[in-house]
Structures are given as structure tokens and as C-alpha cells.
Length: 315
Ligand SMILES: Nc1nc2c(ncn2[C@@H]2O[C@H](COP(=O)(O)OP(=O)(O)OP(=O)(O)O)[C@@H](O)[C@H]2O)c(=O)[nH]1
Image (cartoon, rainbow, N blue to C red; front, side):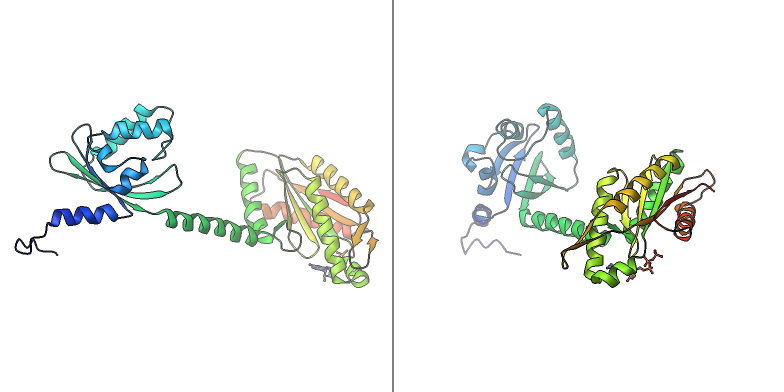
């Protein structure tokens, strides 16, 4: 606490004003019903492309309207300025100290603190939080990337089992709630072990990547394709009944069976086949597991009766 010392003859007020003048933070004092500016520091005036002297006596409304019209100063996104201003005035009548964040047209951000004092005086103090906002933004992007990586299969770049566990329950819940069609397709490469044995693990990886790309191209973007095991894939098909799901399964199976999969290292191609189990939601299903169990049984049957086929299971 600085004591006012008359003998030392320093003027506390002018010292404070000097301090405010060199501050990178903004400060403004307004008074009356119209919020006329009594004082503002350099940083505040600079935001509006003015000097302190030019702004003294100007009302908050005039200042902000000019900012809105010229798009200089504070970023004001509204079609109806008067309605926006009325809302701001209401908020700022509240006696308690309040804080809000505001962005400027030059990209800077300030965290403003407002305080209402006696004689209808308001003071606003704004701290430049641009760096903080940038960090916050970068952090949000990083979190999104981490989230994406956690849900993505590194080899094929499609969704992984972790994502499947969450999304399949969600899609099932929506279909059940709104009595919509919903089907599931389980796809497993036949004798994939042989591909690895004959073309090496990297060759096997080439096949998995190409198969994921093919399937991605063949399903709708409202469908969800995930790799849920080594050579096992699942497709969730909202708004799709068993018959349509089976037709799609056959189309995918045939396309894969006709395709020559390129093995990069060996510069050769290999043909493969897949078995597919298909099932659809039933009234009595309680969770997505119920549908998956039927698809799994259909897949097992497809393998058992000779592979390279799609089988749909109703019951
Ligand atoms: N290249 C490669 N192979 C994998 C990967 N994950 C699992 N595998 C292989 O996939 C093969 C799966 O073998 P099995 O479960 O016996 O099945 P399969 O040989 O496809 O036989 P069926 O399913 O009965 O037709 C194993 O050889 C695994 O090593 C992977 O990420 N890359």
C-alpha cells in the first residue's frame, strides 16, 4: 500500500495515470446514463484507432456503433446494432463486478472486468488474453487430434474397435428409439494366414489397407466401417434393412473377389475372398450385441459351408 506523502510532493494520481498509459492492458472510465468516456488509456483508444483525447466525451454507444459500421475495434456480430446495444446496456447495469471476453477485429482478445461505482460511474479493465486464446485453440486442436488417433486404426486409417464399441451402441439406440431399420455386416478375410505366409506380413498389410479403401468407397458416408480385429471388419448400416444389407454385402464380396491386390514389396498381385455375416435389428433386441451375435453366427456359417459368401441371419 502506497501512502500519500504530501511532503515528498508526488502526485499519486498522475503516477497511476502514467502507469495506465504505458500498460498493455486497457482501461476506461464512463459515466452517466449515456456512458460518456471520462478517461481512457492509450491501449483502449488505440483499439478504436483514436487517441485518449479524441475519445473523452464520446458515448459508449457512438464508439461501438462506429466500430460496428467500420469493422474496426471490437468485433460486433449483429444485424441489428440497436438491439445488440440495448442488451449490452442491460447486462452492464448489473451492480456486481462482471467479466466477459471480447475479440477485436485485428484478432486480439481481451478479458474485460467491469465495475459499477457511485455517481453512475463504470470502470472497465481489459487484460490482453490473445496468447492464452491461441494456446486454448491449439490445445483444442491437439485434443481433437488425440481423440481422432485414439479412434483410428493406424494401419488402415479407418475407425478402430474402440470407436466401434461406442458408435455401435449409439447407432443402435437411435434405430431402436425411432423404430428405424439398422443392419450390421461382419466381414472376415478367408485364409488370411496364407496371404501372410506367402507374401509376408507387409504384403498382408497391403491387402488390409486396400480392402479398407475399397470398402470405404462402397459404403455410404452415413455408414460406419471399422476394423475390429486383425482381418475382421464391421460395417454399421443405419436405415438399411436385412435385404438391402445382404445386397450390399454381396456387392462388396464380389468386388473384393474380383480385385487384384497389389503387393508393393514383391511387385505382384494376389486375389483373396471374404466371408460376410449380415443381420438386422429386431424388435426384441436390447443392445447391439444381440445383432452382432446373429451376424457372428452368420459369418461362422459362411466360413463353415465353404467361405467366399455372404449369409444373412434373421433369427
Ligand atoms: N499382415 C497382417 N496380418 C494380420 C494382422 N492382424 C492379424 N493378422 C493375421 O491374420 C491371420 C488370421 O488368421 P486366422 O484367424 O487363422 O484366420 P484365416 O487364416 O483368415 O482363416 P479363416 O478366417 O478361417 O478363413 C493371422 O495369420 C494373423 O497373423 C495385421 O495387422 N497385418
